[in-house]
Length: 344
Image (cartoon, rainbow, N blue to C red; front, side, top):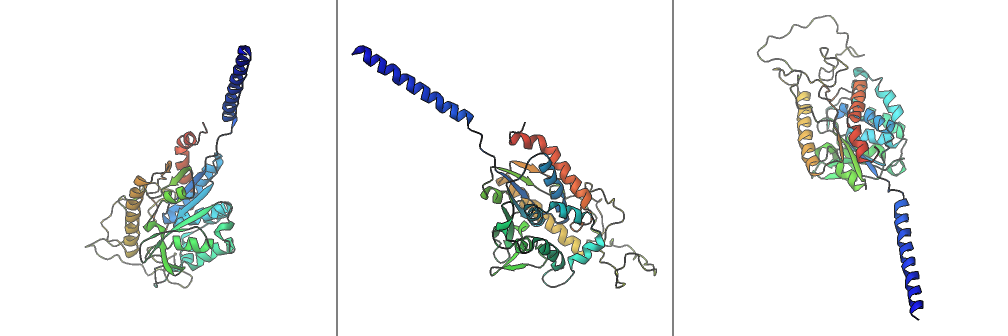
């Protein structure tokens, strides 16, 4: 009887030991859970072309975002990426001239300085009526309800409608009417949508903030106070429109600035700011302040901040240097990105 009990006890101990080892082995051999990467693309008007270079750098390093969301120009770039059209966009923006930009922006004085119908139609033709649910990557855009100031997350419906609402910069682009409410630029409420990426179940959020270093002294492009008026030559300007009228001065490039330098802001000036410069700088101030506040309370796992202090809000024709700076900004942060994702 005693021998039988000893044998039973030894058998049970062996069973428990082997079973425990089996569980440990299964736990050890179980593949690690995939880290769901979220990409939060911030707003910044023309500075948004830097997102193209940033996404390129991530993809070249083998880092493919599982979800993407964006605010304003970030919503546009994010939608193009989710539609697998980044090659087309990069080719198109790299050929833009400032004259082409002015024609596309559709200058008007009702609801905003710019209608935006021409450029939106260009992207509408590309998306071809696609719904957000049909995109290759989960996608969402941020807009702001004009009446209440509420942050609105656009996660369903037409892609073009979501982008159009998210880029409606107050006073610049006309608001977008959707589902019975007026929507304007998402930068009013969430310029770098880290919280939205978290809500889309991202484990690691890579955020790109385009406005980190833009509050520097800059030339606002107006006349200098107490200075005699500058005599205008009667010779026709080479920068005339097809109808013979001059281009708007607030959209024309500054001939004294290097086209490929997006890092260095213009020197401070005593000249009176033009109307559009005042609006643009006010929007920049607002977005910087809101971004810093939101990112302090809702930090990203990785924050990428391209140096774009030398780009103005309408410098859409300067895509190539902006794209290069976006790539360079990601490469500067690549050791931290790989360490966070366990890629070392």
